[in-house]
Amino acid sequence: MRYTLAVTSCNRHELLKRTLDTFLNVVDIKPTATIILEDSDKPQPGYLAHSSYKGLGAGRWINNGVRRGQWYSLDKLYDALPPENPYIFHLEDDWEFRTCHGFMRRSGEILDKYPHIWTVSLRGSDCNGHPLVKENGLTIHEPGWRGGWGGCHFNPGLRRLADYKKIRSYGFYTGYGVHGCGGELTLSKKHLDVGYRIAVLDLQPYIQHLGAVSRACEPLPAPPRVLLAVPATHAYNYADKTYGIDRPTSGRIDAVRETWFKDAARFANVTAKFFYGRPDKMLSGFNKDDSVILDCPDDYLGLPYKTREICRYALRNGYDFLVKGDDDSIIHVDRLLRSGFDLHDQMGWTCRCLPRNHTTCGCYATGMCYTLSRRAMGIVASAEVGEDWAEDFWVGKLMRKAGIVYARNDGWLSGLSKHYVDLPLPPNTIAAHSVRPETMREWYRSLPNV
Picture: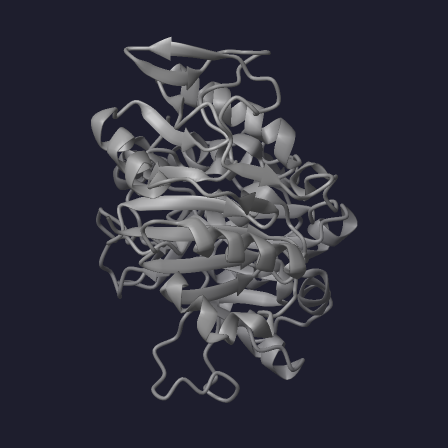
């Protein structure tokens, strides 16, 4: 049985050591790989280099840079899981394992036989008082107990990678803004709704909680306020080099509004807006609830002016970060939020320079989607536009002049030249450019959703 040991940790490396030690002492099938996600900026502890941890298989340590909470951490951790291992043994950093004959093998047999079982609990009858019931000869957590428990939980246990892939992400349902306990109940209800249950391996508990208080249930730092901005209505014909306002038949604005703008509304710290310049005719697609008119040109060649006004708007309204997108782009909002963009002044696509000498290559974040911090927005907001007509190239020059080297991310995808991006998108896609409205809607309909 191939499985990945997926561990969340939060600055408790002594507890983590005890957890891993007791796990390795009793597990009957060693993991194929181990990935540990540290919810802080702490580096990997030195003890993991000891030969006694070779039983963890191929290892990887990831840290968040700052504390972000359980759901952000789980999504980032599960994004990194190797797809060739069909099972996950989920583990937190504060559990002690007791001797249990063949618990990994037996858990796998239950998951293989019962596709509706989401995980196999090792806590026996000692799980916060949760009643146990029989279902087809299998002991399970009573579904719906105390408002919705029994569909899933994040105590140690074996589960399938395929079941995680059936949901968009945990952050899609929790918004990343809640601490673990509240989000866990929300997710349990979602899993109950589609028929998932938690099986119990034996009535005897085989694990014991070590943390006096779960860090997953502690309040989280306030997330940064993010403005997701889409300049609207500009059009440019490369063939005859003419430009003008609006594309009434393109459907781009409606497609964005019906897809990833809806996802942005799930996150309390994110505001999504379309931005128009001074109109010279009626604006199709304009909606005062999600649209702003700025004092600037509204054509393609005026995009630097509009971008400058968007930065000024974001700073006036107290946003910490700006995410500039396009109306022919897809942005996977929850994946963007866990990309770590807020650790950098600017983030964008990975350039094609060989060798990738990003400090001197002169590349810039393409206009399909890039992020700016308050510092970077301030630079753009106070700059003269000059002769530049391509707003992304202009912003890139300003960033380089200020000594800002933007962070590259392989999750950015763009159609080349006049070619459109087609489905399916790569699984790590954060932003995709040159997307037809019908493709955008098809992509959104294809997203998993329990």
